[in-house]
Image (cartoon, rainbow, N blue to C red; front, side):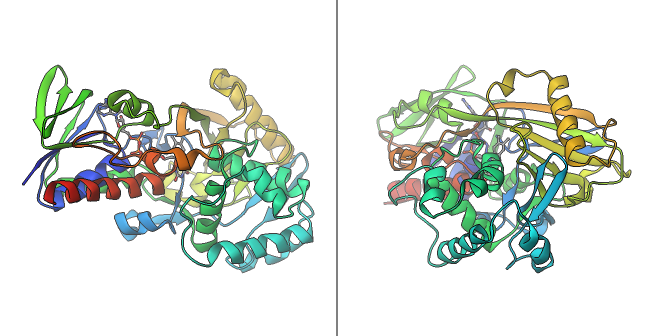
Length: 423
Ligand SMILES: Cc1cc2nc3c(=O)[nH]c(=O)nc-3n(C[C@H](O)[C@H](O)[C@H](O)COP(=O)(O)OP(=O)(O)OC[C@H]3O[C@@H](n4cnc5c(N)ncnc54)[C@H](O)[C@@H]3O)c2cc1C
């Protein structure tokens, strides 16, 4: 049996800790915050379930299927595609192969040409055949990728920019096309979902499993220093030195960069501000489809979470809406101004509806939600065993910025530690 420390209790640290404990090691997990889960968290506000920032799970992700008991999460699904919204106009665009009910409205939608719809089907066929991409193809931006595939400017601006602006937190579509290919495949093969109890149910399940495997979990315990010393590792935790046979650094990327000195760990972030609202009922006819703002940048998307997961609601007819903002300067925008922008957008999309009662109940400003992923990023990311000695890395920043990347990194880090320690 080896003694192993895991620094950071986000998704990656929880998976690494559980797997190492299951292999018979004595594992201590140090998390600086009072709660586990890292970037994936939920809380109750006025009877509503509010995730910290609008975030979703793609249930086709291979690591999601491997690491989570999806049935126990009671998943609730969004309808595929989205409603393209602009002043006075709403138009459904879906995946006719997964959502035959939306075939007619999608076919009739004039926001995107028939040629673009056929290109989407061709792309779908190509990206769903073969294995999951390894992020090693020659890279370019999502915008260049879509142009090369022949998509029109109208498709890019009206549909891809708000949809992928929401996924990559970069509406200019300058993010790596690797992220597009992986997520497009995931959306073609599976559903976009949230657990009935909120996204925080994901780390809660991983934490339960880690505890069952015997992980000693210390919350409110920040790791201040990691030093590969001789055969082992010395950690400074809350002013005291602790010795372990090995350590996995599974913090956010800037902290991992600081603790390990590994230069290839990215430190630039992509941010988002999500504001959530109570909207007096009845719910909007977008239903469980994400509303994509084709008319302006702010908000980028609006999702009616209580329609997707009634459990997110407060038990009344009122709807819970989450608006995400990714445009420049949004981190400094006042909450009142954000609410006014959402009210203005909704009343222009739904002129028949009085949305003056839209009431903000939570505003999350998250400057570092993902690490920035311009083209070429993934080829430069560190390997889990890059640090010297018995120090290892886990975290989305060793793969790509996503739940898939974080879960997969935890598995790989645990495998690397086990291979080195057990020979
Ligand atoms: C608003 C938002 C929306 C997102 N949307 C999606 C989405 O829809 N789909 C998707 O796949 N991904 C999404 N992501 C990205 C995804 O959540 C992350 O990629 C993933 O959760 C990262 O997990 P991680 O374990 O690598 O890191 P983190 O979650 O950052 O975990 C690191 C942990 O280390 C702890 N820590 C830091 N420093 C120390 C220290 N010195 N000592 C001890 N502990 C420390 C932190 O408190 C934290 O708990 C979103 C993220 C955000 C914030």
